[in-house]
Length: 111
Length: 112
Image (tube, rainbow over all chains, first blue to last red):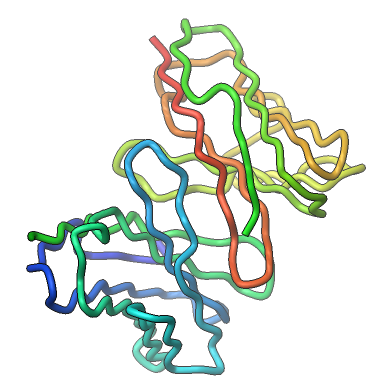
C-alpha cells in the first residue's frame, strides 16, 4: 500500500503561471514532509520542507502547504519558469531519517 | 548542501554478476542511505548505513543481495549481487543534512 501518493503523473503549465503539485499521504505518524526536484540523469535535489506543526512554508517562488486533517500537501511554484520542468517528488518522514517517497509528477513549463 | 559523488555513473552488466557502487561525501556524516528507483516507481529505501555497525535493511531487501560497507564517515559501498534484469534501476546514495536529505547523482544499472 502506497503511503505517499502523487496522483498526477504529469502536469503542463504555461510560463509565468502557477504550478500546483499535489501529494496525499495515509500515515498519520508522518511529521515532516519534503519536496524534491529531479532532472533526467541526475539525483533528486532538495527543494523545500515543512514540519507538521506548520501549515505553510515559503522559500522564494516555492511554497508548500500542509493540510493535516486532509492528509494533503501541495507545492506551489509562482511564477513557473521553463527551468522548473522536471520530475517533482513528495516525501514524508516519521520522526526518523527514513523517508517515504511518492512516484513523482513530471512538470512541463511551456514557454 | 553536501557534495556527493557516485561511481560508476552507469553500467551494463550480465545476469548473474555483481556490481559494487561507491558513494563519497565531502564531509563526515553519521548515516548514509541507499535508495533504488526502478522505472515508473517511487524512490525506495534499500538500507541505512551507519559507520561501525551493520546496515539496517528495509522490508524486501536482504544483506546477501545488497551487501553494504561503511568503512568511514565519508564513504560507503553498495553491492548488487547475482544480478537479474529486475535489478535494472537507478541506485542513489543519500545523506541527511539540516533542512533536508541530499542525494548523489545516481548510478544507472542495466542488467542484460
